[in-house]
Length: 206
Ligand code: SAH
Image 1 (tube, rainbow, N blue to C red):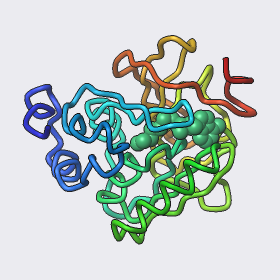
Image 2: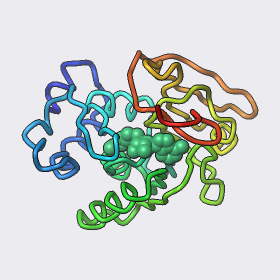
Image 3: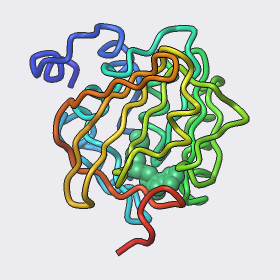
Image 4: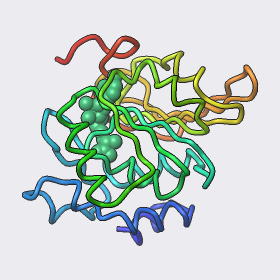
């Protein structure tokens, strides 16, 4: 998988190393484990949700430029895989998930794998997690209709927000960097995520 990601254009060796170390198959339901290391598979993890394709995880993580002293917030824990990759790179990862059952199983899985620098909470992540912030990196792994303002406010100066924004069917992955009270945005690529549902996301599941 790492070789495929590298030849597909992922250059950051720290990201490739982290993804090489996290056992992705353990984040998938048993029936799908044989597909765990193909870079373009997004797999159903129950509750109508999916684990993102490895290539998308790599692209978002690389764009986030996670440093070893960084505090990171992830919105959309899902299986916990992206949180595990982030935790290999950062000092501490806070991750929030709106479906309590997924939050619980992700926490169990991450604990069993020995991750001690991840905190999982079941709540609406469109409000961020102010009490734990500010964050050098915020990564959203569900598609947002717009950029949630609370997330911009919880970035530290110089911090990066990486998120998919756009209609339910297809989004554009954006990186927004905070410089004081200014926010500079650039687009990475198109991608399709499950919807971000919450107060500052989509209203209801369809
Ligand atoms: N990062 C995950 C992929 C998650 S799929 C992984 O590595 O496996 C997106 C997840 O976002 C789903 O589990 C969905 O329930 C969750 N989600 C959607 N809206 C949310 C919200 N407002 N707050 C927190 N989580 C949300």
